[in-house]
Image (tube, rainbow, N blue to C red; front, side, top):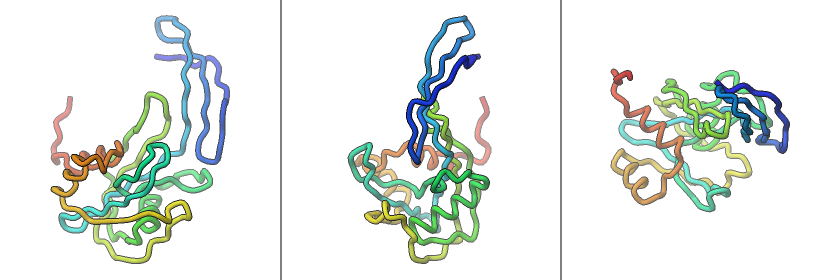
Length: 181
């Protein structure tokens, strides 16, 4: 177990807080953890038959355009009280799709070595088309539909590199009776 001794905020903006924690490890060793605190987010896998809807946008920190599943958090740090509601909102915002059924597939920690943020994964089905309601920062967003072979082709081509999207696809693809360790 790691015991927190002191915490101090070193940076804050509208999307995240960075803090530095002095800690004591179970063996008595003292150390420091840098932690990025961001609100949890929802990722939604829109599926129609065997087709999956993807969105593509420019991701500034990675310096490129990539395909991924629709995902996001509430604006202005609004707490995520209902991750399913957030998933429906992100789906509508980014693709224009409305889901008749949204099913939770699980929760992921995307970078738990340095960040507190987690991702709630949902499958959206019984989809109805509509107009996207994108934020100004998503104005260049594109969307497409792919079958599983197309999904794997985009991964092989390096056009899907988002760890959360790849892990979400694994949750979608897991056997109904997954083995336990």
